[in-house]
Amino acid sequence: MKNTSMQVSLELVGDEFDINYITELLNREPDYQLKKGDVIKLTKRESPYTIWRISVKESESLDLDTHTNPIFDFVERNLEGFKLIAKEIKADWFIRIYMTIRNGRSPSIGFTPRQVELANIIKADIDFDLYVHDFCPGDDVYTGSCGRD
Image (cartoon, rainbow, N blue to C red; front, side, top):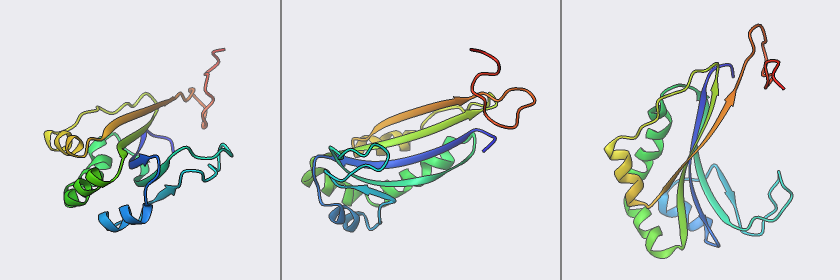
């Protein structure tokens, strides 16, 4: 990708819980799941947590709402399931926002009152991971330094 891009996910992370139960309560298959003790492909280590995750795919954009609204719409449609999970499962919700800033084009970052309220209802932490990629004049690919050492 040549322009600034974003990807957003909603994760339930806990010691151990039944991933199938979460899928059933929220009526949605996870895009990613990992059980405590499973081997993590990238690190070759066992996962210390169980994870259930859905994501909005990465795409080029400067509009955070384009990526967060599908997550918050999902939460709003399934509030009763989220409330039941909060009562029955010892785990934490995370909304993870990954931004790769390219060509100096950084998006504005803000949340609507609705988004803040929904995140609060499910007690979700909101995490941002920002990555800045410099493209040097005349380069077609990321160099990382533009001649700086």
